[in-house]
Image 1 (tube, one colour):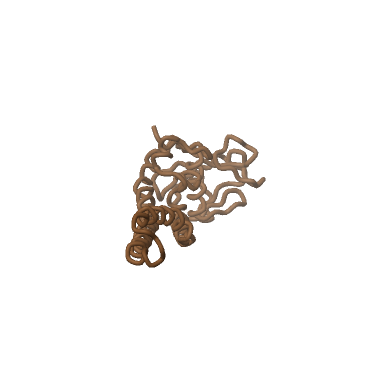
Image 2 (image 1 turned 60 degrees about the vertical axis):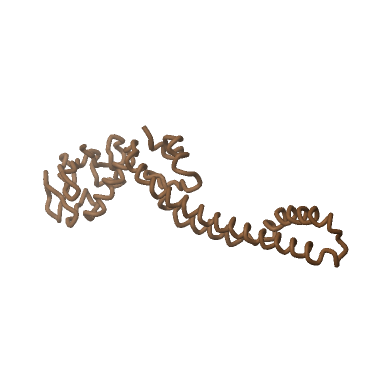
Length: 222
């Protein structure tokens, strides 16, 4: 694909430069490989210079510099401008998004592990409380005035109350903080490959069903 570079007043240019020294149609770029460009000057008024040598057509690599009118760019700067142009014009991101599947899976597993740890603590605490209630009622229930025929009913009521009350008494701040830190860790990895929108709030299957990004309209699924 040929990329045209010129003054910002010319909307036909792919890369627009806000400088009057840059002609409306200044030069064009053809990408030969990941490290080499073919630069062709389009009879610009103030010329195109690679390493301070004026050119009509020449190869350009990252270690070189280019001057377009009065604007000078390093090789990395020009390659970045070219990369951003291709990203802006690219719509289909199916392959890039499919590579996020394993990262989504890792995130869900780590999140489930934190939640499961909290649930295990609840089960253990409930079991301990129920055992304590049972011990109290069946071994010293008579001493505190609970008749034998009512001890079983009282133990059930105590167990139900324990199940309802214990989750409210068990501190939840640590689990919330761990989940928050985990999401923060993955938020940059689980992002739209085009606009970097955070996608960590929903699983991979949800986003596949959405088919595209609502923010930048990148297509994720065929």
